[in-house]
Amino acid sequence: MPKKAVMVIAQRDFRDEELFHTKEELEKAGIAVTIASLKVGDCGGMLGGKARAAITIDEINPEIFNAIVFVGGTGANVFFENFTAKRLAKEFFAKGKIVAAICIAPSILANSGILKGKKATSYSSESSNLKLKGAEFTGKSLEVDGRIITASGPQAAREFGKRISEALK
Image: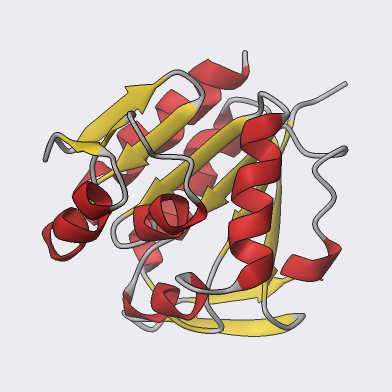
């Protein structure tokens, strides 16, 4: 049974490399990737990339995915206080699955409460929120604490994808 990951992106202004490079690394490792957003259909990246959300975040079933990956980019802030996004982060974490976030998206994890007492990193703009919510902010380009994987931004996307793949093996 191949492992499955769901990548959550904003309809507009997701960060291209954080989706495409991470997804490439996951698929290279044989992991089936599904893209989810607030609505099914076309999504646009900050750099002009296009992606298609196959499902909505409301349709994500933690029973069928081994990992959830929240992609950054300026549009990701729509998920910061999104009830479903926070519930999914908590549910995947509670089930011992991989919960990953890159760029500004680790704030979704922080706001869901799962970073309390955990080492984490993010884009610098989110460091104070992570600390406020109890995370041990490291500022590294990539951080792994148990089943939680966080990365700081586009330059870390390939390594981020590789680490998620390794964690799913």
